[in-house]
Every structure is written in structure tokens, then in C-alpha cells.
Amino acid sequence: MGRPNVGKSTLFNALTRSRDALVHDEPGVTRDRHYGFCRLVEDRPFGLCDTGGLSGDEEGLAGATARQARAAVDEADLVLFVVDGREGPSAIDDAILAWLRKTGRRFFLVVNKVDGLDLQTVLGEFARYGVERVIPVAAAHQRGIPELLEEVVPEL
Ligand code: GDP
Ligand code: MG
Image (cartoon, rainbow, N blue to C red; front, side, top):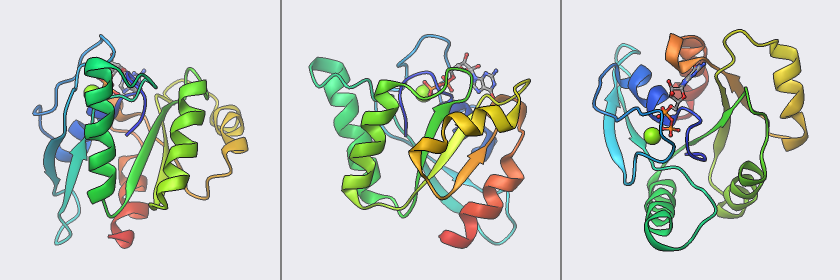
């Protein structure tokens, strides 16, 4: 989960190695829950859910998307909170983080789009979030995926 356009669907595709999830340049394309299987770790397949972006808007379609995303979090064993390493932390990310903490769900912070960025600087920007497990990836380039799986799979 995460706000629109951070690369949630791209990450879903990288993990499921499918083109099932809609990836689009326009923010907010995925409106509901989208399920798939990650079979990249032999003998340890797991189910995965891609959700629509949370914009902080509770009205109309954005509100419906937010309810779907929250329902996905409710049923998840582990949540991947995806943020955009290029843009850094935003007010919406702050709000999602606060909400996630309230749910009591286990979550990892996945910092996407780190391709071409200085890792120390990017991770430093998100350090104030105080999240224990932070995983930098570049989902569009399949970078960081093995490291992400190494962290995620033992938790399932
Ligand atoms: P979602 O709204 O969170 O599902 O985001 P999408 O997966 O649809 O991706 C939004 C945009 O970010 C698209 O233009 C992607 O190509 C781009 N994107 C996704 N992952 C990466 C990445 O690792 N690096 C860069 N530079 N762009 C990415
Ligand atoms: Mg999407």
C-alpha cells in the first residue's frame, strides 16, 4: 500500500512477474484490490495484493479506493508500505504511516525508485519515520527484489 504513483503496481509486477497489475503513468489507476502469487522463492510461494493509492481523500472514488486498501491491510499478514525515494516523505505518507501504526499490523517500509539516487541520502530522508525494516528497491529495474524477498519470506 501507499499513495498514488509510488510504484506499488510496478513492485507487484516485479514480484509476480506478470503484467496483470495495471501500471500507468497517471496517478491512481488501480482502484481496487488485485491479487497475485509470488513464486520467486522456491518452495515459498505467497499471495500478494496490490491496492489503489491512498490520497487522503475520503470522498467518492478516492474514498472507495481507500476503503479497499484498508480492507487489504486488514487481511494481510504483512504490509509493504511503499514510498517514492525520488520525492521523499510527503504529508500523505506521514498520514498513512500514522494510520498503519494504529492498525497494529506488521509493516515494512519499501523505498522505491532509488535508481540513480544516493542511497544514504534517500534513506536518511525517511529515517525520521523510525521504521525498523526499510528496504530500498527500484521495482521498475528489478533492483532490490532478492533483498526484499529475503526480509519478507521469513515473516510469512
Ligand atoms: P502506483 O500508482 O503506486 O501503482 O505506481 P505505478 O506502479 O503505476 O508506477 C507509477 C510510475 O512510477 C510509473 O511511471 C512507473 O514507471 C514509475 N516507477 C515505478 N517503479 C519505478 C522505479 O523503480 N524507478 C523509477 N525511476 N520509476 C519507477
Ligand atoms: Mg497501481
